[in-house]
Length: 375
Ligand SMILES: Cc1cc2nc3c(=O)[nH]c(=O)nc-3n(C[C@H](O)[C@H](O)[C@H](O)COP(=O)(O)O)c2cc1C
Image (cartoon, rainbow, N blue to C red; front, side, top):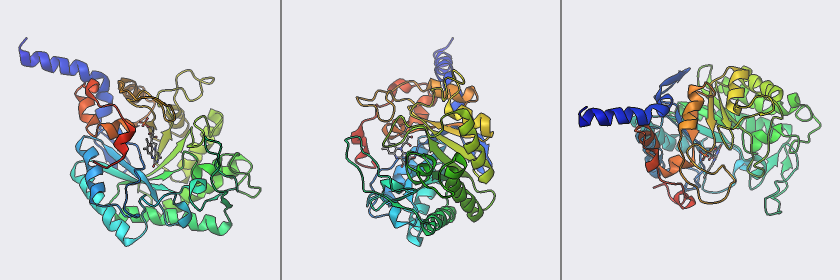
């Protein structure tokens, strides 16, 4: 065997477990060159609410490194109560559209697709509104300001602001939008009986607690038209409670994901702290939450959580790099269609290229200090 054939043979051996990650996929009008998405990650590095050239360069870097789908950091809709900090981006005015267009052009130029994550922080906002006046309890025992219980007018305004942001995303050249329904923010807080104690049609039973998020989805769907891809992100953890589970069992999960599908969602983004962990071990020993969501709804899924990093969200200690083969196996085994990578991508914008070459050992470990700049 010649030297060249030895190394190409080794390459094939090294990269074989990762091959499922590099199969292209089309989901409606969304064409992805591979199964790897960048997880949405707030950077708090916007000057005001408008992204700059630095954001175009930053997001394009991940597409240049091979990422199939870039999902932006949480981006505010047009509601003053949504905001939790001055330096997070928004998408509702002409300037936002023009600046985000620079970002989408740069990502497209590098061969990637890009979705905008639309966000309302709800009870985590600076001037918070929420389904009920239940404040966030921080881990240190302090509480955030008590949110004002949303009126019907608030609910209409926020719902319409999500829809407006959806059409702005289309004008800005995004290939899809993602509704942030996870992690304890506004839409998720309607689902949980702990944060939604309403006694009207929007509180109480699961059907009532789902009602508002579904109204938002339906209004967004009407605004963006029948074929524009809508991703919905939901989670099994919250910023203020890493052990929180929105759905106690597969039956409840099934009711929700089928309702999302029927309201117009195309893709479920299932946010867990470990994408490979069983969702309901008592019901099935290995099926992940993404696997359950896919099976119950028949929708394509994105799975996220601890891909190629040693620590789950909320775990302390130094974060080491780990083998992404178990994440690739999720795709091979039909548990998910796409995997999203968060912290490992921040540390390695060229994560895809390295993994494709079977060189995950060369990946840099993530460190919080990497979040200080967009460089
Ligand atoms: C710095 C940072 C910012 C984040 N911001 C967001 C966000 O804006 N929206 C969101 O849905 N998730 C956010 N997340 C969660 C990530 O999308 C992802 O679910 C999480 O990092 C787990 O993936 P990983 O283990 O691959 O890092 C953030 C995570 C990090 C580390």
